[in-house]
Amino acid sequence: MRAVVAISLLVTLVASSPFVSPASEAALGPESSVSPWSLERITDVVAYYPQIAVDSLGRPHIYSCGATSNGSRPIYGFRNSTGWFLESPRAGGCATLALTPDDAPYLAGLYDPTTYASVHGVRRNGSWAFSPAPGSSVVIDSRGVPHVITARATGMYSFDLQYAHLSGASWIVEDIPGGGGMQSGVFWVDMALGPDDTPHILFYDPNLQNGSYHGVPKVRYAHRTSSAWETDIVETTILGYGWKHGSIRVAPDGTVHVAYLADVSYTGNSSTLRYGIRGPAGWTLQSVDAPPGMKGFNPNVMISPRCGLPRIGYFWLGATGGRSFLLRLAAYDGEKWLFEDIFDMNPPSGFSPNEFAVDGFDRTHLVFNHMVENASALYGTTSTLFYAVRQPIPCAAPSIQITNPPDGAVVPATPIAGGS
Image (tube, rainbow, N blue to C red):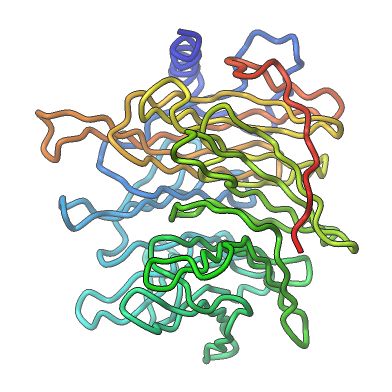
């Protein structure tokens, strides 16, 4: 019931003030009864795997994949003071979204529908320009150079992970240490750039061969220095899920922050959201949100530009029964983790990913797709793509409001053994 009330409140806020400019925002205190989130519906078109990036003015840009099986098309859009602008940039593939230093949207991972060649696209002056380029999982550095994750096929369902970046007119492709023998559907990878524009990569190595485990599954980290790759193991843990259940960001001081799903148990209906930082002595890991329940799915780690403290957006599978997805934000106040429940997707019709981002004004942005079974609908489901934005969390006095605490109002961070 509390979750339903929270959703109603957010919708009411959207009706009166759909988008708040950074200049007019006031940070909420812990005692405030006003919701810090504003929520709005983007479109009811069927959308898959939504992504979000926020530009230098704090404006959100979104992208979602289409599906040829039901005739839906990819969607790109951005939000300004008058509302959302949406378009379908190109059919063919499921892209990843990034922004260039001058705030132009950049898509990687599409393919040309005629030649089936891999292409990237950039939008300037209202139109898209596409050119052949490898890979996906794109990030853009301070010079405007794209960096991507790509792969070399080694079998029908197996491949080796590779990293590539554009140098002049050519793409430089390198193998990622520890990234050999990946299996389709049971791995994930994420990449971020450090303050010196070098790549940092987090990925899940299931150690599978022909569907069977050949060693212990690992969460791995790789960093490209000016001369060579450095790599180590963050943790050994069994996940058993594909999609992107790990996230990496690098703070301005070079500290590496990661978050990932860990300790998945199908029979025990449990999983854990793990967070870690990498220092000179190696990894320090914490269990942020632990069982009961399956927590930590699809995490996005963010670093507050004002406080330098981590926030993690993710969802809790089955929080309110069945296949429900409870979107949640965790914020570290320097001593403990605090939690805020955002939206209860109950009942969904299937996996409904989400993506979080933080802007230069320290606001948290969120895009997610809510799919609900509907036998009378054209494709058996109704789908709504939502956007939400949260006012800044004060550094000294966090305003995280516990709307539906599962295990007590606060779950302290609990250190666990690091990887080796």
